[in-house]
Image (cartoon, rainbow, N blue to C red; front, top):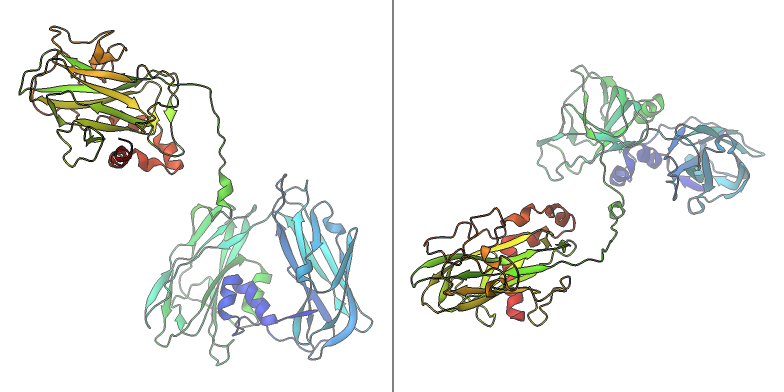
Length: 567
């Protein structure tokens, strides 16, 4: 038999585990002393609610501590037995003894159990046994029954105890208040107390209990609250209590908050203080437990009210199991077809606008959603005699061999990152401006869509590598031709390669038609990948933690880093 300090047990009921840790040593929530009585009283909670059986998997456990109170000063050392009758909860709940928390010798036989023990400590609430209860498989919400507990000894009488067990019910959970811990004497702060009903049934009225030590003051005196102030010098007598009752139905899945915050003020004499706040159902048993025999005075001010705040969303105990992923792989390929440009005549000093890139001719779309990695790179080598004066932000100027280059305009080569999503009909258009510094007949550059590694350029999903490269030709001499057409070197064997990347309806990106001689800045020159943000993939990437890979600046940095190593 283990002795349970009655003050400590009452504190656990009044304040919960967290609060009890603050004030356990002081014995702040002591129950009143009983008069001498030779009868031992078996006890425990009058009611206990169980979470419904989940249907599959292990049901959630609830514990029921059965105690025996010995009000006499002397210890009882004779053997005694405590009998449990579980027939009332057959089909409602399954029960077992928690061996780690039960010192008595207990044995279950069918729907009954017997615990044998000896020595009941005097002037103490002693633990008899701890039961573990779970809703029985097949039990329905609202089903209930009684556990009956009786005691027997040749030299003592035991008052029986009955616990009502119900599947489902309200579960009032006080939410953290977050008061500042370090304050100055005289400093006040609002206490926005709120609680949630996370159970399966409504609570018929609630009781808010506040317990606070000598250096804390709560100036409000509401008419639906009653107050007592500790005035003595003992640990128990310095504790003040406020108990507020609220009528009405408090529904499951809902959070409630005080309509106006309470004031928690540090008195001028405040030092190390404790403030405990508790919510329970508004029952006579709960009220008696919180009053603990003290005299209370009802407040004379206005009525304190509660308001509904939001649906109850308490912290998930195991958030890792809220989401599962299933990989599905289709046997498919994509075909990234590069396109270049052909400009018939471009005299020295002129600026031409041209668009290079690739089209995904499918049938598959490509998305590296899990990793957020770039799919690849568009590698553009500038034709001889031309200098780039305008480029997309996602393209990085490098040396001819792929090395670092500080000056981004006028580079001989550009690496343009292909982000982590390319849809099946995507046209990845990259508008460039080039100034003709020197006329070179049929000056030829090239554009290649490839993997990041120059030594392993093949895209793993694109088996047709013949159309991954196209030419960019300046001063081709093909007068009157505004398109390379099929077989033109600018098309890389594809069709319509010199029409730019704007698609059939996009005239603004057709910069290669006849080799524009218009000077100035290319329209949309810094938004070559503007359409990718609308691919519908950003939400998925965010869920996978990879959304940042789509940011243009980040892509450019990644491109530069990879280019340095891969050339």
